[in-house]
Length: 416
Image (cartoon, rainbow, N blue to C red):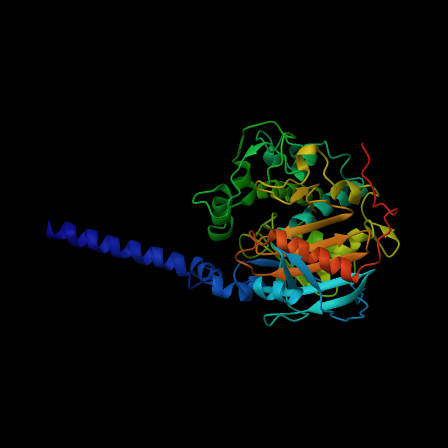
C-alpha cells in the first residue's frame, strides 16, 4: 500500500511538472503563461503594440517604392455632444485608452496623436480590422480573374472544406456574415466557439482550417446577419489556396507593395516558422499611418496612383448593406451599426463606413467629406463605448472635412 501511495505521489508530481512545463514553456518564445500575463487589463496597451512577443508571426515587408503621406497637421480642438454633455476628442482618447489617432483629408494628414507611449513606428494590432484586408484580397483575386464571381463556394478553392457546411457556403454569404452556421462569437461567454477557436489556434497551435471546419449549419445562408470570425478565416484559406502562399506574403505582394506602405508589418500565426498558419480572422500588426492609407485606398474607390486594384463596383458593394437584415438597427447585438461585405456602416450612414476590431480599433471613411480616420486603442470597455466612438469620429470628420453639399449624393449601390 505504501508503494502505491508513493507511486501515486510521484505520478502526481510528474503530472504537475508536465503541466507547469506546458504552461510556462521555458524552451519556447511563446507560452500560455505569457499570453495570460500579456492580456491582463493593465498591460493591454503594451501588449497590443508588441504582439510579436505574445504570438508567432510572419513579417510583411515594404516594397521598393515607399510613399510618404503628405502632412499639414493642426491637431485642432474638436468637441461633440454625447448624453447631453459636451465632450472633447482628448477626453474620448484618454478614457478609451487610445494609442493612436490619425485623420486624413484628401490624403493629407491633418491630425496625428500617439498617446500612451506610442510612436509613428509602433505596430498596432488590428484585431478584426484585419477582416477587411482579407475581404479586399478576395476582391483583388476577382479583379485578376482568379475568382469568377462571389457565388462560387469555398470548397471550389479550398478543398479542405469539402463536405462541411463551410464548403457549401458561397463567398458572398461568407463576406456578408450570413453563412448560416451555429457559432457563438461571445468573447466573454465560458466555452463559446470563439474562445475555443482562440484556445485551439493560439494556445495549442492547432490547424485553424480544421478547427473552423468543425461547425454545424443551423439555418440557411443569406437569412440574417450573424457575425462569425470563422467565416473570415475560411475566406483567408480561399485566398491562400488561390495564390498558393502564406497570407502575410499575399498581403505584402497585393497590398503593402502596391500601396507603397511606409513601414513593415506582420501577421500573427498559430505556430512559429514556415509551417505556421495565419490567424485569418484577425491579427495584422501595422503602423497607424498604414492603416490610414488602407482607408484612403478605399476612399479612392480601390484605385492607387492611377491603377485600379479591385473591381470598380467593389467598394460600393462592400461598404453598403447588401440585404435588409444588414441595415443598422437601434438595439440588439449590432446596435447603431449595420454591415456590408466585411465593412460596417453607422446608423444613418451617408457615404460613411468603417472597419472595426475589438478593444476599439477603427478605420473610418467619409466619402462625402474626403476624410479617413484611423484610431487604435486598448479599451476594455469598447463595446459600451461604441455609440460614443461613432459620434466622435463623425465630429472629427465634420470638423476637418470638406463642406457637404446636400445635392452631392454619395456613391450608390446598384443591384446585380
